[in-house]
Length: 337
Image (cartoon, rainbow, N blue to C red; front, side, top):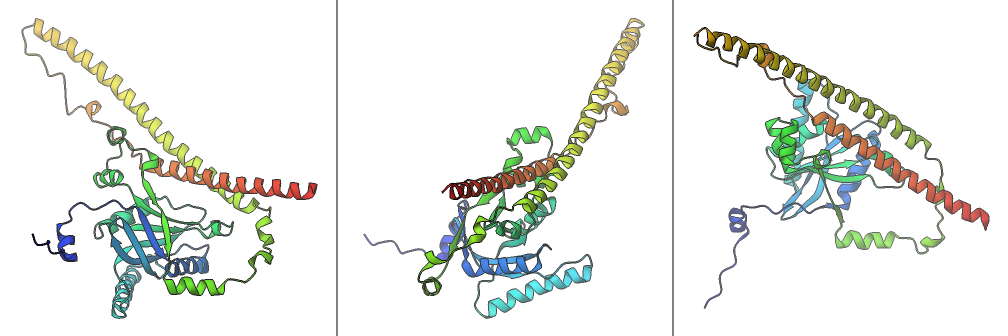
């Protein structure tokens, strides 16, 4: 029996209906360096840029990127920014560089990125791209000795709710969605070509053990902790305001239910009187009555994002405090010796 002919890439792409879930984001070292350089040059201002690469199975490859110009509120400037992106992608295509958009990157300050604007940008990208990610880079965390780089995407269940714009408690319970299910963090894998790896090996010092980096023993973490605490307090105030909205809603809802019960009792007593007089009873529901108008439930999206942001600040404070205690115990042991 003759062997079956191998399928071409076009046949595989057309017949594959169910996409495999995204497992890892593979980034070229050059793309990471471009992102770090762009974000650090404009820090503390926030910047964004385009990610270019390929979507291969369960791996999203990021091979290149380019920065966006600084955006302003003027519509003409925004149109120029869109033309700039198209022109950049055309130029990259002419020099045979990957020009497929796979997402965007943006800088952040102390992890303050979980906003409604980020979700709206995700939804705009999802209209044209099947799978996309957002690379978040935090220069302030990098100053603490941690590469503040992470890849994020929206969960499928959250995107369904956002399209319907229905974040009521009933829908959230139905989808079993909590505040931790908004974003999904995808592992990042750094990849370099064989030539770059060989070149980096030649650049390494012959005796790296003799090089002392005393900055790692720096004990001053007060500025970083202070800013985190300030942002954390602001988030707690915002969360308290969101809770007051829900308290006001439930207070009005209970008041409306009491008014409805009083109106129904009055209507039933009136119907009993009419029935005794041989008259037709009146309907027990009156849609024109304002007390039967349903009260709109406040959206829980803002409270979910604020709670997510609070958790992020707490994790950062916990990580920095743990490193500081490790340094203190190390210096204590050195002094005792």
